[in-house]
Image 1 (tube, rainbow, N blue to C red):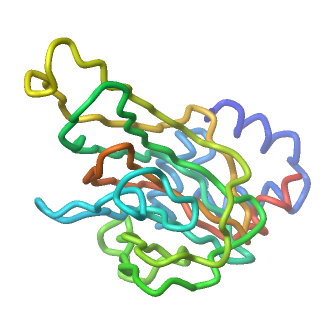
Image 2: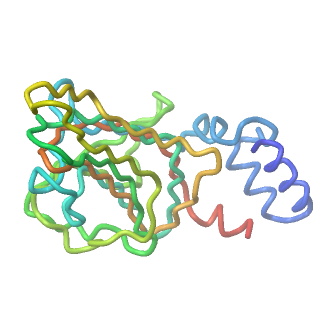
Length: 228
């Protein structure tokens, strides 16, 4: 990817776009572009769930509920979010019969930011990946929605998904079910231009408890559009 960025800068060698790109990367056009942006203070990390207290998935505690995500990253107009690594770990509920399903889903609504609605949720704080940067993230982060959000209530596309099916061999009392996890770490990540929203879900036939660690870049979307 660093080679592609260097080539792009050369293509714009006499334009304002190259100046903006070099400014954004701190002149480090030849290095890994993700790490260069983290070094400039554009990298963020947020934890979903704390210590041994996870988020019970599925809205109602069972199946996935589109308007009650387990986590949400809302991107306002004027900003761009680039996912670097999204990881979720789910403690699968006690299975009692055949064909129980457990799911994890990361998805995007590409045209709508969160409107702030829901009767019950937890506000999360994203921390800068350059630890001496103390300013607030431009991305609104929230989790544990137990009341419906009005918008966005749907997804435009999925980033990643995992699904597991219980197959009971013998009696339910002999079933062993372990942790289920999903890691999304794209080689070619999407540039999510606000207003938009990333939603994370987990749940299934039986209530599940999970955690997530979300790492992403966030910067002014004008720095993307100027290179188009």
